[in-house]
Length: 419
Image 1 (tube, rainbow, N blue to C red):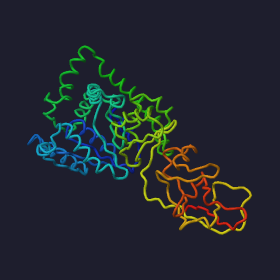
Image 2: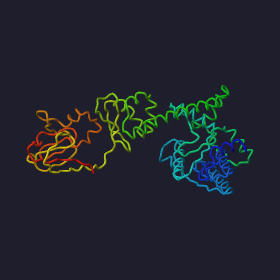
Image 3: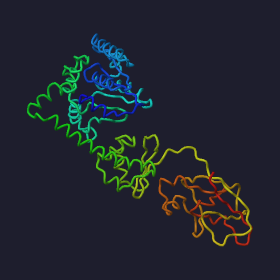
Image 4: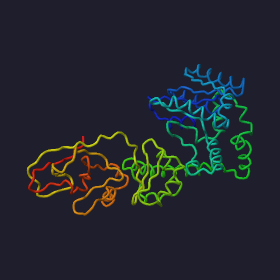
């Protein structure tokens, strides 16, 4: 078995339930992939995108892909796009927009169970990607380049050079078509491939090998970082908080990667820095599918979830003839003659006051919460029991002296139960 075949067989394994969709342009790399996966007896289909950019050449590419698939009994899925018309409306870069169209098409198939999309990028593509990302000031994630397996996409040819793939095609009589646009230096990748890298290799013959070694090192670093940040991300999603200690230990790149994993816009990084140094209780809004705001507490960022409809606790009221020997703030005893109107429960609001037992005058509920060291992110959940005129009870924290029972009187006991 040829080296390419053996590697791909080991890479894919023996899972008979997997269905491999090969992205095939008709070029040598993807046609070799189709040939090998078919030879290995894998369950495969082919995806081809005809951008209709090169007239008759584009049609010949499609015809070759469809003819080879028909000969091998492979289902070919073809998407035709009038790309000149598409570009006129989108106004983007041709290669970037073509990639978006291609991957959007692939995603339609990747959503199905046990399907993997197989891509034909090889070692030379990896080297080009490294230099392109380097020129764009990419961080570790960019310099780690393409992974052999990532989010349902497989790249089994990454260990092999373009020459190795082409030699296999010649030895095994694989049909393919040359894309003449690859010779044009109009685009950055083509200029890098056709001009800059050959010049560098004349001076540094081991350039590709050195870059590929560096890419593997970046990939190992990236995996270690992602594993670490995945743990922090899961903790945030579970506890809704991130300690300043953890945050301060991360450099800017780590912080950006954590935001990416949390699906928080990178532009929020500067807001986190401001919030870190703000006063306690400071709040910033956030655009997120789960979280509504982030609140600064003593030593944490608290991630406040979007509030849905909340059912208020139900008041359980019963008459009792005796008072307990020990009073707690978890239940309230009141004199029925001191109640005005209906007894109700609600969440507290700014400006609420009550007259707590043990002090003269009144006190803001917000001050009661502050004195009790209730975190800012949890204060909106605080309940108060009241009649038509006054607050009787800041539940669990403070009881009003305005309606408390006398030891010699019949009493009404109030209990709150959640339903």
